[in-house]
Amino acid sequence: MTIRTTLAHATRQARMGTARATIREVDDDHLMQEVKKADVYHSETPSDFERWQMVGMTSVPIKQEEDPNQKQIKEENPTEDGDWNHNQPKGPAAEALMIYVGGSRSHPVALIDDRRVRPYGMSEGEAANYAPDGSEQMVLFKENGTYIVSLDGKSVKDPKSDKTRFVSLRHVNKKMQTHKIEKKQGGQSGNGSTGVQALEGSGGGTGQQQQQEKYKHEGDSVNTEVRCDKNRIEFYNGDKLVGFYDKGANKWELFEVGGNLKLIIDGSKIIGQYQDSKKSFRVDSTHAHIKFGDNAIFVDDGGCWSTMAIDIKPDNCS
Image (cartoon, rainbow, N blue to C red; front, top):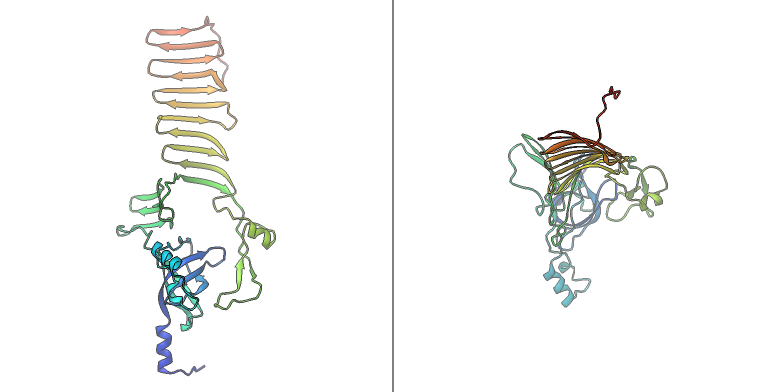
């Protein structure tokens, strides 16, 4: 098929095929993430169009920051609807390369990066999957190993709040996230969007039910977990804490889910208990003892001692 065109038309299509833009906000509740609003040229603010990402990677960029000077100007000198050039936000934002399919400005697709939060200064061969909130959390791949990094502190998203964070390595149970779609009422929108939306949530159920449920990517329930924060390493069986290491106290505690058995490594002593200290053993720098009820045997530099007379008989413990 031959398509007739002019040189002027082909030139215009080539020039209109790409552009740069700033991103106000994105909407992740779609099978293909959508940009809610972007600003390209003055008076050109496309909305509800697709953002393409690499398979296996997804992120939600933080919203555009508000420029306080621009807000003050708006409040003091409100503009009329026709004076649209002054209404586009000017605060720092994620940026996009806009690709207009077929040179049509009604069909944009965005490729997005954010210089506010991207880690830089990495070495050749290194890579990272980083938190888009600007908290410096990341999974970092270096030649000598893989680092899962978390830290307390502020973020670009919330620069006024010091957050306490942790790292969780967990095996979980969760339902498959649905990837069905339903048509929006009214069909396609005028801005060239596909006119479909994802059904939220997990498992079966109606679209309305799934819209109300927020899918838990971290898991519906935990089988096993190791959790680290600034001061502790914790071990979980399901939702039950079964052990921890406290850095400040230099103390380990390990115990079973039922609570009968406990092992404590506390500084210079080791303690093992069944139910409580009346059935226990203990070893420290000065002595060692075994205790069962009121009966106890202990050893120190002075000798071997017992709280009761010792009878000799075979040990049938297997």
